[in-house]
Length: 301
Image (tube, rainbow, N blue to C red):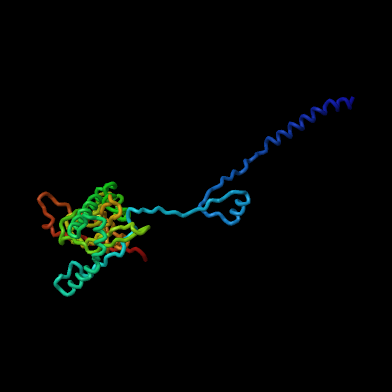
């Protein structure tokens, strides 16, 4: 009797054990395995990787560090003109003025001008300075309007970033007042680039003029300069043209002796000091108002 009861209860005991085991297995938390994503880098393959790739029959492609090159203009000014000391201040009748004149004739290089005339039949040393001044004025007027398409047709790809750098969120007011001296050609060079015969013409023009410049920030506050006070400016403009290109144009390529942003120093912002409130009929000159001096500030101990 006891044996028969034991045999009857044995299947029930087995089913209970199996159910409890399945419950323990279901309570176990299985975390997913990490998924590794290969990342491509620009680092060159090592010798071990190349050896493994060759053993597997895979040929690694050699990487080249290439840089784009623009052949419509050169990357700088070849043999730049050296302005004489005291230019625009010495008379041509004095001894120092005569020395300057002889140096200008030496640097003019008539042979280089003849090379320019061989490719540009309309080039003359008398008419070209006037054309260069027109290009200079048009380029700066276009810069104040920031017309990119027209500015690219007036300046080279090397000069464009130098003109637009630092002008973001600013307003420029530039005006050409008059020419104090007629512009003239003082230097000319015809360098080759890439291959022999691929010639570029660079002509330096001396321009002494009177201009006004005012720079405003994005809030309309004056940062530097003045629209009412003209300044005398002596500049040496470098114009360039791809001579072998029949459709090439003379464009502004740079300036000689001009200060960059780092050399010129930081711009001192112009601020307005609040004055007294005037009543109707009063004038500021009659109040004898004294401008208060700024208080001393201790920046460090």
